[in-house]
Image (cartoon, rainbow, N blue to C red; front, side, top):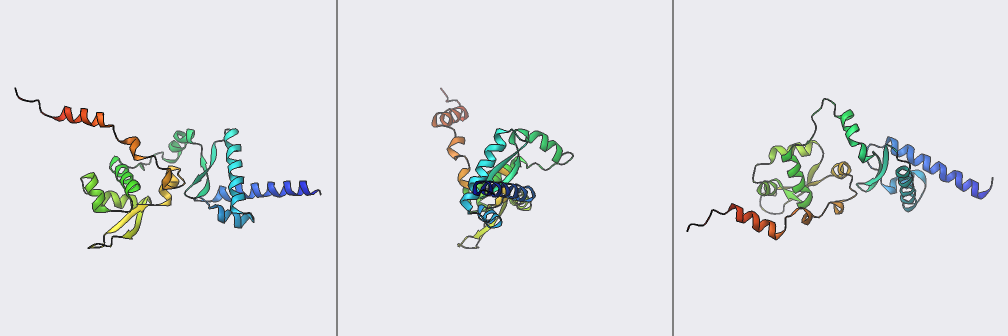
Length: 198
């Protein structure tokens, strides 16, 4: 067997082994762990995954290979979410409420943050919502405030990154994209002021 053919078949085996591992993985698998399993350098694993991701995208498969939460994971193609959601959530009510989504956004952008701080931003008690987010695995206690009372400080989890399809918190959209401009705020304030008396 020629050296080129041997290299080609070894590369094919690594690709197939990578696909098999990712098919059964319940969460994203780090390049380092994949490298150990496949006896490849993590950089070679990343290159292989990028190549596979491009091949899957080009052939318009029902799944994609995505880099999320510091690892690689097979996921359903984003444009097919409606079909998958219908299948998975049929008869279930597992969507987060608006209050839970608001609370999760505050934790994501301000972490580490205490329950009281989240409540101050939202203007309501968030204990129940925070418990729900913890049970769902989206937030967890990450530290303790060194101040009086040593309040628990919360942050998002790798499950949060995985569900949003993000590799790290740096991939969150900038908050400035969601803040209205000065003219909009001024116009809004003008509309709220009572009419001046003659």
